[in-house]
Picture (cartoon, rainbow, N blue to C red):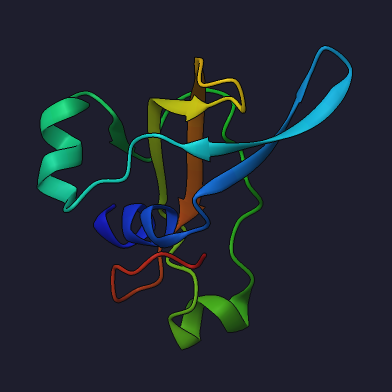
Length: 108
């Protein structure tokens, strides 16, 4: 989970979102210094092999035996704050879903 979080946390500080029919580039308000800080703010954010609508195809044979895909899914779900150009704060739910490699790292 931490590897998927780290990829997201290092990603661009801005995000393009459609608001009232037009795309706007919004800046991330919340950048975290560590996964522990993130977990303190979002204690129920993460699941391994979540139930529900996160179906993915089973890993293919070559990905499985080479360790690229363990078949295990992870879900990180939380509310992200974005800063609009006018300074208002917009809150959106974010869901990061990925598969793990055999070593425990995110495939993303």
